Image (cartoon, rainbow, N blue to C red; front, side):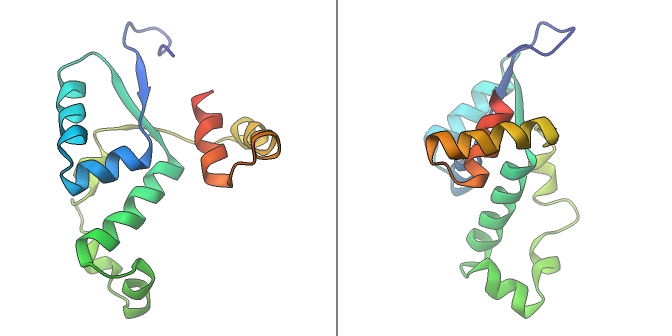
Length: 124
């Protein structure tokens, strides 16, 4: 998919790639380094943004994000700049009515869960 008016190509990254990078997986880290040295524009959608932050809380604390929420500690984990500085590297494509309509059909046709269908519809 090409961004209108530019020669840069967009590349959509799923939350699993971002999470593996957070974990320090060498393959994911290498992918991020390659992206930084390319003309590819890394994009995510609001679902990937949410899934990444959910897993970030669990990985950073070692406990369930729901436990952190019950304790009222999310503000202690999600800091003003971290992980916002990481997420700011990505262009976020918002989910609109068209994406939701397509995702509904994808769920029915391919037996997908909502988040996966919205991610796929965003890519399409």
